[in-house]
Image (cartoon, rainbow, N blue to C red; front, side, top):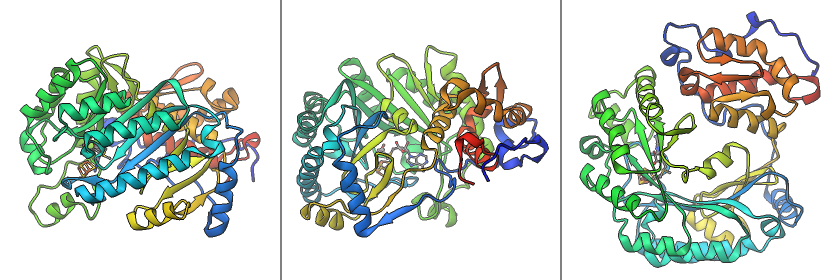
Length: 457
Ligand SMILES: C[S@@+](CC[C@H](N)C(=O)[O-])C[C@H]1O[C@@H](n2cnc3c(N)ncnc32)[C@H](O)[C@@H]1O
Ligand code: SF4
């Protein structure tokens, strides 16, 4: 049924509203929900049908109004960090060279589709794994290939992700000459003891010094990731990490909550009693608060619930585009993307990926059909990410906003938002739980749909 239902806020479940608590930051929800919570099953195609549909979409030169980006995946790391779920292959020069040769073929082949040339790309992200493990010639060539083969918007952001370990000056200069404009380094923690336990290479002094050199060159945007909740982190050494961000001179910083998962080195260490039980969600919430207050009291601009910029050159455009539901052209084994709303994940297996390129095919498992109300879902995700849900950014704006008032009122009672005329602002607690709020609002609209939106139940 898709008629509008008057909602009695007493019927709203705690999964949607959070629970009343003296400390909503710590206890409004019990656990962060996944970024891609299952809001109704998306239909998918596989085999020949999927290929035919993808070919049809790629032949389409009428670009959708959505912004677009390219994601290029480099699935190699020198060492597997204990906490990480992204590790795929151990770096090996021969394997990486072979991979790069194929990646080049894939990039050129993908640039030739009418879809790829239909409209300029607004951001390119070379992620991993550890793309900074490519050699200087490869980094330079990759940048040149992107510029040669794809239409790019005038101020397109081109990010190289990786780590500072062995990121020498010649690599930096080669990447700059290739056209990279932004570097995103995983630091995770500056603290040498925390780093060693997580199997991070290099110590605090090297990391700080190298970041200072890179930022002082003033030749690109330098951003870093930190994680809170790692073994051996304390409020004191976390405070030092935050201060180190300032001293490093970086232009942007992401604060990520540690997510633990079965099968990681960290989980194995915990299970075997070699590592202390990790911090609870409520303790991590306090570390989030520490970071949030630290940067907001200084001259940093908050770009999302977990990202701060010290300089206007940092825009973190790729991440923001992904949350807005941009189209993404995937390149490389394990790269995910979405073409005209059809989502796919390329195979992580290098051999299968290689066979795909040789057969002029894309090696992927399935193609998900465009999500129902994709535009609305993306608007909700992006609004919660930025910390403000205003009627004007929602499709069907005012009506939909009014329809959600019972939910917003319940959130306000639970300390998660502050309601204003035509917007709700996420409180600090609401920002910590922003993914839960985005998922809750999407679920709410599925349970109590507006007739005009015909949301799937
Ligand atoms: C794909 S990784 C690549 C980073 C880069 N290879 C490095 O070693 O720094 C991107 C970011 O994901 C974050 N990340 C990885 N595992 C995580 C986890 N278990 N919980 C939270 N964040 C995680 C880290 O902050 C990391 O910098
Ligand atoms: S954090 Fe980076 S280097 Fe470490 S395993 Fe994950 S992707 Fe690889």
